Structures are given as C-alpha cells and as structure tokens.
Image 1 (cartoon, rainbow, N blue to C red):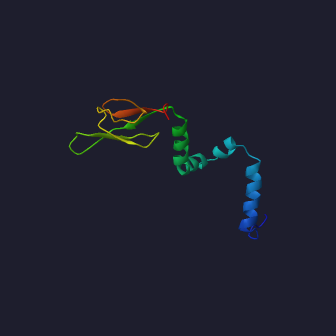
Image 2: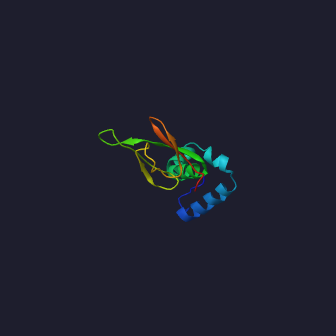
Image 3: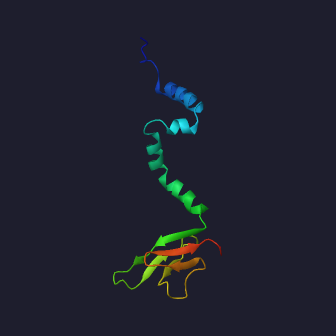
Length: 108
C-alpha cells in the first residue's frame, strides 16, 4: 500500500483542482453535503439575484407599537413608505393588504 505522508497540501490542492475541473457543476453539487454548504454560503447572493430579476415584489408591513402606522421600504428605490392610505407613496407602490405592501418595478 502506498504511503501518502509525503504529499504536501499545495500539491494535493493542485491535483484536487485538476479533478474538479473535469467535473460538471451537477456532479460537484451531487457530492454529499456540497449543495447544502453552497446553499448556506451563497444564500444572500442567490436571493439578491432573484430579487433583481423580479418585476413585482411584496414586502412585509411593519406596524409601529401603537399599531397606527404601516411602514415598509420600497425594494426598488429604497424610499420608506409610511401609512399607505396617504398619497405620498413612491411611484413603485401598487397596493397593500393586511400583510404586505406590493411594489412594481415599472416607473424606475
């Protein structure tokens, strides 16, 4: 049996790169645990890509402590909208219900 004690980390890493370069992304993410690690590590980037591809987004309504004001930040222009029944909403505001503000990308 071959003794591998003499292989250096850098040499191993170079050979590992060679092996990975022969594999498809599907093969790599099919390795046990790899998909879960990538999903956790790249979560924010994936969600940002998804958000940037949407023309219509819903945002949770936040109520103040008295329950009087309804507040949310527009995901397209980042303007904070307070009390959706007033006319000072940003141009992206479309509608609201008891849980969400709805914003449309058009108007940017």
